[in-house]
Image (cartoon, rainbow, N blue to C red; front, side):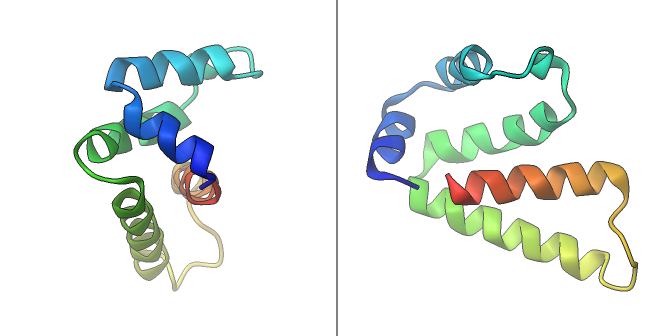
Length: 92
């Protein structure tokens, strides 16, 4: 994550993060999208820990997904969305 993004998220409050994400979204209807469920799971983790600890948790959770579904050719659709959200959060 960029230094600016880290600073922003470390200084933000939980509700402010959700409002900010909605306001910044260029995708109409984002606030009803199933990816929001995944995002909301990580807000408390970020609120209580550092950005670096959040990143470690995201990486571990992606590994857990791949471990659980390693024998399948494709991830189930809802799990695929969750994995994509985790990928984006890790990149940020």
